[in-house]
Image 1: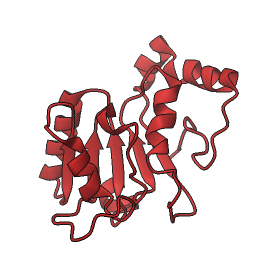
Image 2 (image 1 turned 30 degrees about the vertical axis):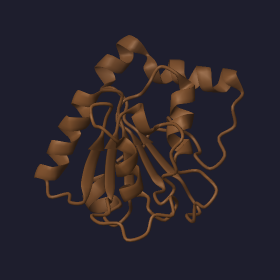
Image 3 (image 1 turned 90 degrees about the vertical axis):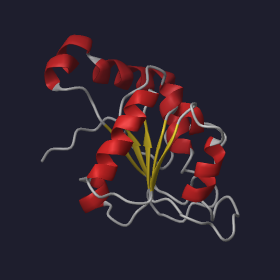
Image 4 (image 1 turned 60 degrees about the vertical axis):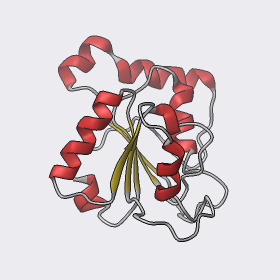
Length: 162
């Protein structure tokens, strides 16, 4: 729904820890009619080429062919890439290290970002599993304990009610 309804014209950067999950998401979104989509994992020769197609303005790339609207990536693109043509970041799964979340959001929250707001979505485990592993509580506690201030990313783990 994020790609087709809430952000149907926005560029969306989706992160996952695992290549298999990235390919699963790619195939699923492609089958649902999402076009201009690609998948960057450590399995491909040059993930930076996909970063340039996804974010040509911030990378000063002219005459881009097949510009991407949705880029699914493992953490192969979570550091050292300029992806601020987008302002939507999705954490499909949550890494154990808080710094990884900050690095992911930092791909779009950079100098040259033209949006007033960066939106970060994080998918949490289903309630049954969440009760067992208490991931949300542990990550929230670690974020508070680390005294890190999120600039424009806001709160990562706020529940959205429907």
